[in-house]
Length: 458
Image (cartoon, rainbow, N blue to C red; front, side, top):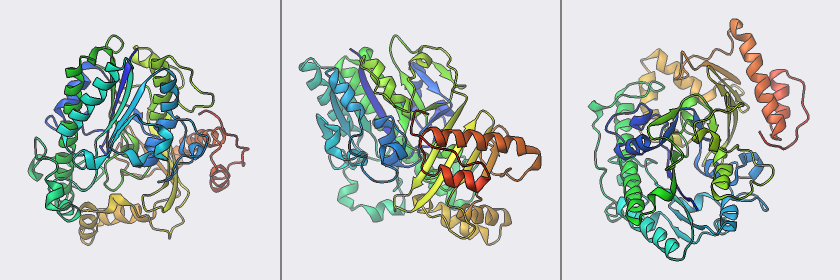
């Protein structure tokens, strides 16, 4: 049977790896993996924050259907992928982020090592050792295996930052190494959705250094897999749980909030060095994919659709758009957002935006947001950008082909009224078919007839 190795990054931007347009020297191990497998240019996570994203992946259900809309456990009675894999005789293990899919006991891990056992989730050698031990034990007992290896980089605090020195003691920092490459401020290109000002540039360099150490972890895990002799019998998947923790990324519904660098290597199935830049895929699709790989039945009512046809180089109908959501920050503040994106346009509904409520989330910690506020005192464009971020508009519409950084809200453009209507209707239909409890408020807020809602597959 085919083994499954799922490797995740914590807060890595979808465009950070070199294979996705990032710096050539940022992620050599991921770039090598991409050259050996297939990359997806339009892959998204359901929600751009850790626990809801991971809970959705492991249940195959939208957050409002599994109960983990924020940092809560999934509801009682919700199935998880481990249930299906164990039916097929798989041993299941997890490295890092153990407490970010809850309740922990519900997942029935045969092996679990959390961040304190892995150099605060940042020690490549520790990941490699644990990976090799888990695989060896499963193979010794004659079992196929599923391992979820979760790097804690590039989550804050970033490498070399003042926050890192304040957050952890010298002794704690000694538990993990420096990245194999540390980026300087003068050698980075700031993403276009952020202003290129000194504070942002400094923090982005720190972020890239942390992303490089995540890549070091990936390399250690893949090397361990190779040493076990199981690489040819293992499906390897890499992704990030959400975008990077900067303004207009993590904990939102923008393109760079949910875009994830999905890489799949499946010897004998995926062709090396291939890409799919047309089909929109959602990480909910991994649940039924894993079921197909293990040759077990996909439970009724799962929201994802198996990726197997795409992995074999085929094309599928119904992958012309993707829906994403946001409910709650790590501080348990509610900012309800919904989004639909297609090949050209992205539409966002901000259910919380009332003109006075101000947004606040983890992506505003650190250097970048304070630097934006300081620059806004003398720069009108940054002032407008910062003010918009705090209060938003009830509706946002972006031409992603011309404006991938989502800088110009076109929701009020009369020439795009047909696009606004079409995307509203598309989102309304999705909310109704998935039983989204915010559907009535959305319909009344944008002037659509209130629809009857019923939980079901997307």
